[in-house]
View 1 (cartoon, rainbow, N blue to C red):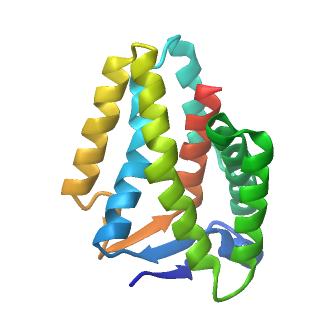
View 2: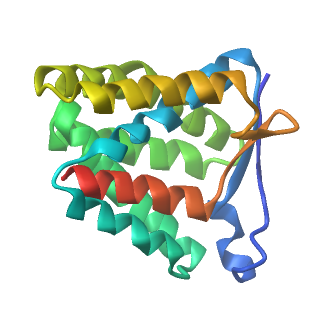
Amino acid sequence: MTSLSPVPDFNDDLETHMVNFQLETGPVTRALLSIASAHGFADVCLKPRWRLLVYSSCLLPVPGHVATAFFFSLSAVHFAVDVGLSISLAAHFMLMLLASKRDFYERAFVLAIAYTALVHTPLFYMRLFREGEYTSLSWAVLGTCFFMCTDVLFIEDKFTLSHRRQIVAACHIIARI
């Protein structure tokens, strides 16, 4: 059973604590998070190399609510590559509605992770393969193995979707645009 609870980010004011979540992970959720998180490893070999400069923005102080809004908006654009913009926007809107209900934000989060791991990541890997980005694909697969075999993402069987991780994901999306 997974449990999702807000985690205070003491760099933010009280209004922004709700955008930083902690998810207790079981074996299935842990595998899904490992797959979803590691697909960004493909960016290590991204060409042209200057596109990686976007990751330097991870060093900037960003308020939590801005990081989450940016992450959520870019996520809709990123998934539009898979399903089209209108379907992606509709799905993100539905997840937002589901997450707005106090007892359902965990389900919304798990649904987003499951989509990323089971649909988006395999489609992304197929695009890398078709485009001949074999080294990028290898890095992403190795990253998945690394995350599954270690506790790097998980502290005491919990995963925290921190504002910083949201910014890293946003950088991946921007680098791939």
